[in-house]
Length: 336
Image (tube, rainbow, N blue to C red; front, side, top):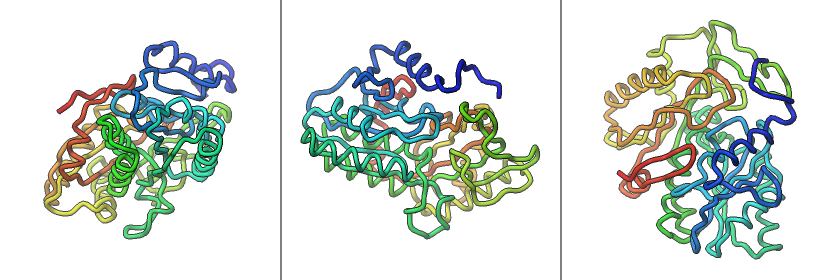
């Protein structure tokens, strides 16, 4: 293991301390716990949006707390869920009387702990909460199947963006939840991995991929994907991934679509743009128009070499929300 760390058990607290020191005007921690992050710029009367999940995925999850996006984040250790008490502390910190939306990925530990936090928020603080669970991973179910087994991966970025823009224009809790569900129902994501990653407390790769192998559909924690085999060319990888995605996605010929090309931690931007070239060509050949594209690192898996493609068909309502401005320490967008 070659990482810039001190003691493995101090990796997350020291990382979080660095984030608060770097962005004291943006982030604050509450309940005397570095894992309970809230915006330092609350907006009175606005619906609060709280997310959470394990560390190791920056800028997901906490990197999207800021203007036009989220209001707070409960942070677990690497690939581990935050506790109900931490989620509750963040909920109490961001509530301004309009209610709080819980928006997070489809993982059992997160679901259990957010559900418990919602009960505690109601009983202890009389805070009204509702939930949207992002489940965009096409590898979690065969095309045409339900979404219950789908993992929440990079496509949650689109859900954050749309729900955050809805809350920023002072929509009520029911509207923000509807927007989040609408975006989440439309997003599909598929990833490919070329190398494993190392959790600091473990100190060695959690799985193995051969030097000349790749795995299509691998999850952001190393969960098994659709298939493993010899590494193909970028064009062949894009064709296989897009064939699966378009079969699973609600995208149809004539649609406008938002596209996210996401790096998993160790893939150069040059390679991500090269992959987008192929994605763009395939969409054009399918009669699908690109409304807007984002390329970069939006949901990583420590230092995993790989990338993912997310597609979301968009209508006029979602276009306006995606085009709205956002300003967080790790994501900034000017209004279109």
